[in-house]
Length: 208
Ligand SMILES: [Zn+2]
Ligand SMILES: [Zn+2]
Image (cartoon, rainbow, N blue to C red; front, top):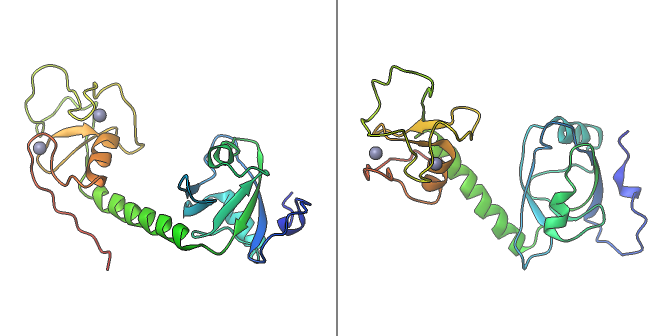
């Protein structure tokens, strides 16, 4: 089922020696777990995160000489080089033929370090969020509000929106509640305070 991708493709284009092909089959009903980032003026997409997915894990175990790793540059997927079109190839049940370059240029490096910084911040922000049991009638900790609970960031009902798996509504230290995704985005974008009461939040980062 898995082929050694190096010999696939059959294109006449001369590729640098640092490139090879990775062939993966996108699973049905679960994400493939490859996170990529790019820039309109930069060729290729940089692999910025790999989830412990079975697909990538199996490929890397069976093809240790041509693995897919964070920091690799994806130049082509199924022969396509346009970022958006490349990403569309990751559809359930489809096979993706990925042309990988293991060497990043300075621009790729900048994209990667920017994303890694964001990932570290996102992980640190997680520690500021407290899950709220939405179905609970016993809201002793809740801040008194009038009317139905509305997320102050998106102004939408907090009972309808579903976002993250853990809990769709989270509270901050000050007990104010928001949609998990809304407040995460707010905090990751550098606003380290409660959007409602300006309560300052302390991030614990172990960056250096
Ligand atoms: Zn919201
Ligand atoms: Zn607050």
